[in-house]
Amino acid sequence: MAEAAGAPSSLGPDWVLGDDGLYFRRGARVLLLDDADRILLARGHDVDQPERSWWFTIGGGVDPGESDRDAALREVLEETGIRLDPGALVGPVYTRSAIFDFYRQHCRQDEVLYLARVAGATGGDELSRDGWTDVEHDVVDEMRWWSLDDLRGVEIEVFPEGLADLVAPLLGGWDGVTHHLGIARED
Image (cartoon, rainbow, N blue to C red; front, side, top):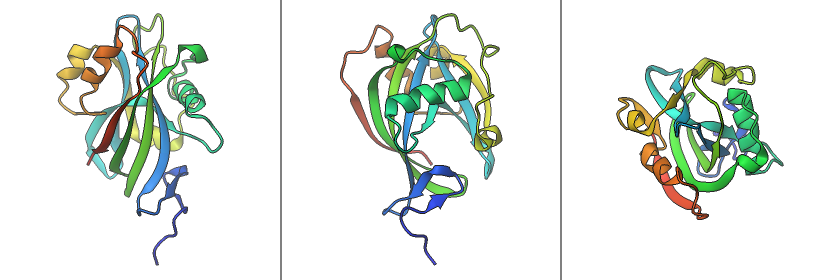
């Protein structure tokens, strides 16, 4: 028996089955930069494919009734322990839809990506996992600050694809235009 659209998922309460047969959620992500123009990324894996890992931006699902901006601020705090001033969040600078397999489910996440800078970040020691969900504890392996040059040379997948080239024009500030990246198939 097929599941009905709107049915919740084992991925978490923010994922629901869409009319297209994919589990869906809205996501808010943050391109979080430090004083040295490094970006903070998390490295994760799928429990069904532990040998495959990838780097991705900080962020997650938008809760019902929550704005994208509020979700981005909450996700940064939960995933890193960093409390951003709401005025530090710029954008959204990009939007995209990502289609991928995760936790034995075929998923689609419509994302808004914001830009924010933090002062004084020097490594991973100041980051906290205290706000992580059970799923995040299962699948997130590490967090790391990356220079854009080092990120361009990484040998595993990075999402969104071409991230270093997406961040580079933002180092001098945002031009005020939200750029739409389209649909990315990340399988």
